[in-house]
Amino acid sequence: MFKLAEFIVRNPKRYNVRSTYSMAHKVFVYGTLKQHEPNHHWLTNPNHGVARFVAPGVTKTKYPLIIATRYNIPFLLFSPGNGCNVKGEVYEVDDVMLSKLDILEDHPNYYIRTMDDIIIERNRSLEKEVVCCWVYFLMNFKPELLNKQQFENYSSSDTHGLPYMERSKRDPTYNYYPEVKK
Image (tube, rainbow, N blue to C red; front, side, top):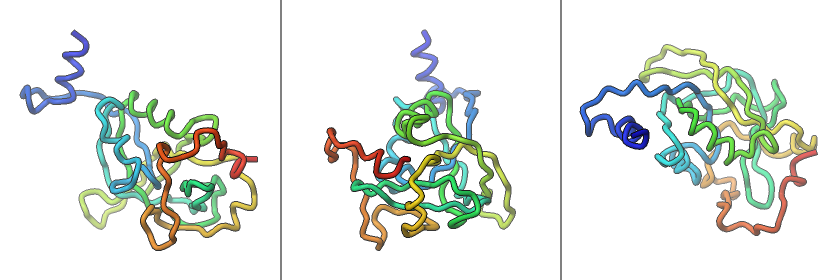
């Protein structure tokens, strides 16, 4: 019975049902989870839960957004006031999706998920709104990472020449955590 109810909630138009499914969390994504980036499929996979795009957003506080490791992974360093107001996307997600994102981001072992203020524009209007979102930060990072090139907006295919290497193409025996973590 539960599986049928879950199917109906995920396909409300097919059954002419209004969904009251709870999208309890807002998440700000700034790297490979954004639209047209290599890990965006995590947000669109129905087996990972439910995610709904809300709006483009930008961090209210400046942070360093860098690309590091041999796999060219984007990291938002928790160093408030340094770097740029980082551009990304805000999604509303359910509990299941949030737990899947925690797995992807290896929270709390690698990234730390914390709340932060994000500025969004609703409905392409000039009116701005501040929303509190979950953001995945690298907290205990090596200080020399602050010397790397910093970005306002991440794209794996940008002119920086540092394309993201998907997990399936990585050496499974190599631990890249020491490259960035203290």
